[in-house]
Length: 269
Image 1: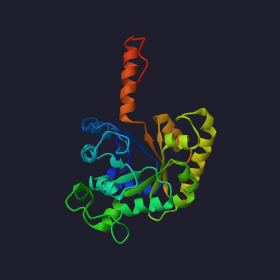
Image 2: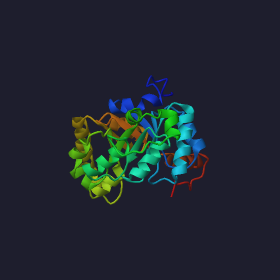
Image 3: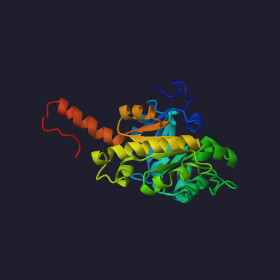
Image 4: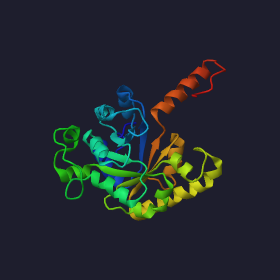
């Protein structure tokens, strides 16, 4: 069912709903495949997150992905940039992203840099882009542009946990987002899903949701499947992203191979 059909109002209201800490469900795109991205963006997710950190897309790919998401006018386009780099953040917003997710943020000072990169003078350091994709969707008035895009920083390191309350309290920050894989390693796990750190990860997630709630910012998490997203949304998170296109491509291909009677099918390697 499409986002508009669920009464959410479509991509134009995404940032406002994020700031109100409403329940939002997104999907993750890692492949540079605009045709596939457009199909997924029409399914009914509230937002489509495009991976500019670990995916295979260049800045040109970000722009194409945002075009694909916008084509259906159902989901909001979001880009995870490679780092706390104002140039990359500006490029993502100029490409038409309605929010940026900034990885590996360790301190409130780094969070403040990310926020400033999303805002124009006098509230930030973003350069007014002129006739680029952002202007077509969001206009050209600096204050209106600032109101129309969200800054989300990731909590996924030991330093981020140490500075959690200060990061959440960063003026102008809209949301924090948990990367459970890196966070698991930061807590001493040998790999994502290591049972040795499961209890500590659970405690960290509770601490993060509570800190975000006290600060009045949204709190999201990346999940391996829809069932996990539903659980996390029931445990204090306000938005959740489901898996990724590249993961589901391999899973579905392997499942159909097994269903076709190939006993050697064992899933992706």
